[in-house]
Image: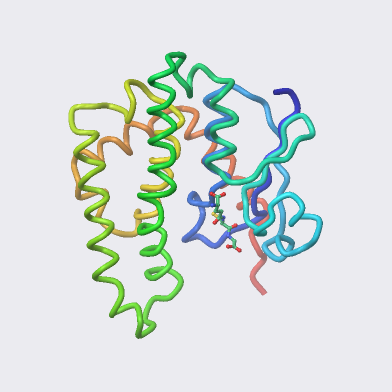
Length: 219
Ligand SMILES: N[C@@H](CCC(=O)N[C@@H](CS)C(=O)NCC(=O)O)C(=O)O
């Protein structure tokens, strides 16, 4: 991997800052010690033909390595991990386990947490939320309990830190407006352990610095 470019938003509202999914990609690149460029788009630009050719759904992140495009944050993190001993263990059995946990993060744990975040932060006060929210919280709790059972007695999802922990930690951050993760001692310690990594801080600081540079000027 030589020339690497990551696409993210030029700015995001405060509730989303530190959550937007280019963070996962930046974190993986920092862990892997890869240099990269960042291309920032305006929120409306995601609907343009040029950007849709990079990301068919008009979302961030998008990614390019040596002229080849890639989208979906988990696929991108996996691509980076394939060439990083920090993110992917050498042993075949462990690699399969990492892959399973990467899918679990984005396909099993993320959907109900994302749903909760949208209800609480984008649709707060709408009548349907009061009806739907309790069932979603139950699902989130069930997923978190299962995850905590896996992590009990383990520092990381698979043996040692891997790409799966990047995805899982960034998913758990979507619940930061609640005490659902924080109130779970095993999960709280896990998130803190992963977030204490210097690569996480570099990635987060870079994302937040981009937003600060492009913050809208009050009228
Ligand atoms: N499954 C996609 C989801 C990407 C996604 O939801 N990105 C958000 C920012 S974190 C976005 O671009 N939202 C704009 C929109 O939904 O139009 C991935 O993991 O890359």
